[in-house]
Amino acid sequence: MAKQLGFHINSSVCANCKACQVACQDKNNLPAAIRWRRVVLYGGGGWVEKDGRWMPNGVFSYSVSFACMHCENPLCVQACPTGALMKRADGVVLINQDQCVGCRYCEWACPYGAPQFNEAKGVMTKCNFCEDLLAQGQNPACVDACPMRAIEYGDIAELRAKYGTLAEVEPLPSASITLPHAVVTPHRNAQASGTGTGKIMNLPEEL
Image (cartoon, rainbow, N blue to C red; front, side, top):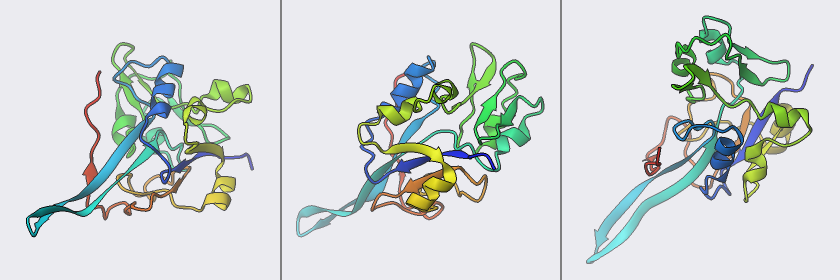
């Protein structure tokens, strides 16, 4: 069986610097509004007054970097009416833009919001696992850009053997939906998907 490529995301050391996000945009010459890889800051808790002093009460935050998860069961592929989306033998999910009609069904189907519409071109776009770099034996741009080495790629079976099988923490959706080819090393404050008490805390980004 061919290797099935996937990502390992070490949320326990992610510093929310967004170098991976910027590197992805730069390498793929993406418009500012399109972000194939995103870093989300999730947090919660608050402050309570006690004896005239304000004290932290369950305050927490952590960051998770994610892009297309190149899923075992990619709903985007199933939703595409023209067959523009396909899953390669190595697990990488790609879009043939010559076949794409920009209907955005794949965008609506994907729980990760991976396919994104390029208004200027009228077609869908998404992470392609830096297929051109892979063909040259190089790493995806996001992997090399991370100063904390929080992103790794490889055969998903090997990554799971090394890091475990967890593929969901808040605010990511349940892994049971699409069976993502991803492994997440959770932050010590991470909350399970669907049970979170926090919210996404990202500040608006310039477009």
